[in-house]
Length: 256
Length: 265
Ligand SMILES: Nc1ncnc2c1ncn2[C@@H]1O[C@H](COP(=O)(O)OP(=O)(O)O)[C@@H](O)[C@H]1O
Ligand SMILES: [Mg+2]
Image (tube, rainbow over all chains, first blue to last red; front, side, top):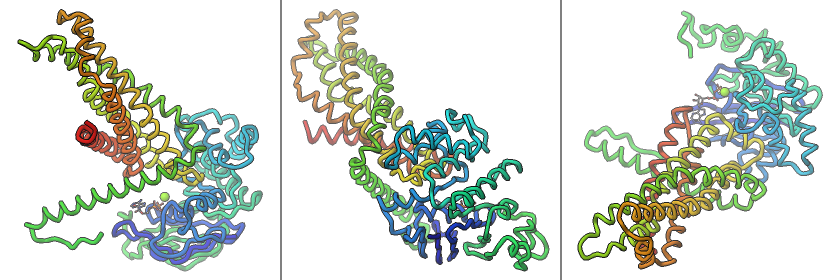
């Protein structure tokens, strides 16, 4: 089963954020969507779990059309998807362990002991052993991101959506998170979509990279294809060259 | 919503008021949807059940000190003002009547309701607003929780159950402080005050106060949840939602107060 987006459109008021975005992520694959801040990456991800409804187009996850789902069906689909939020979005009134347990408490056949075991296991996976009793406010940015990741993987989802998992982290922490993303793919076989503006990280984790530009998929290809592509906008983004990215010859320093 | 652009300066105010009317109607529609959602979410007792007691403690028990503080001073003032007003042929024991009646029927429920709109309503709104802008509400949803079952229902039920409790405590305190004032400052005897207190007392008055406080509890907590969940634009938005909660619920409390007086008395 896979993720299929077709002709996805979404506007907020008069602002068109997505203008016909099409993408397929095959089972077991990790795809990356790259693009500058504010281009609509988070908006895109939110459509996959039904947090936003598209104005037009199709969103199919695990063989079900997401926008039509309500109530129990939507909850059932959401149990198959782990969502790693950009700023972790940990429940700050709860300890890290309670955060990780939140999703598990909704599942049948999970008693206290089984939940506690799984929480400890997830803490170990993200290298936060012994931090379960802390509150989110007592964690560093990197620890918070890893706690968010632990919460997302706790219920062993088939799909993982990462919203800028490495943004704002130091290079060492970035590569640690990237290794985790790869581990999820290789050991658990999850289908994953990573949204990022960090090209280094995208090259490391993705089987396929898509550039989101002006609400559409501008280019899709393997990391090798992205490195050698001739597309000006893509090269502009990868190389960090505003003149190429914005299609200007004279150069421009006031980019968004 | 499609509105034709209005360029003529004379019609601009009308267009603006039309837009705000539409926005207000839109809010009423969304609030009605939240209400319907909350009623549906009542079935989901597994989600909200365990959260109810902590919310009742937070909404109710923690509000008792401020409510009693207000009631104490209201009782003193009522007692003094009643004795000042009731001169000449009116017997002094009517002080007891006035303190009792006004505390039970009006001041107990309404003053407590207004103060809790500030204390409880703003608190709920800021809490849920912060959860909204930091994507904690989205996170709840992705973990297959219904935010209405998890956040709105326990808070609103806590308001409905606890407001009457706080109000009745406030009423009792107000009457007690009025009584003490009468004894200490007005040269009244306890027997006189109690005589006045019982003169026009109807058990129905207490029910009236309970009905009012249940409705105020639902309004304050419900609007707090509604404004909180609608929060946008970061910290500034959280502040705006808290203000909106206090202003809107205070206005609705006063309107409901008039409504119940007209319907039930
Ligand atoms: N709920 C919303 N209401 C209005 N505008 C929004 C909303 N969510 C996102 N946007 C706008 O959509 C654009 C894309 O946002 P986002 O997806 O968060 O960007 P990013 O690629 O950095 O994740 C931004 O310009 C943002 O202002
Ligand atoms: Mg984003």
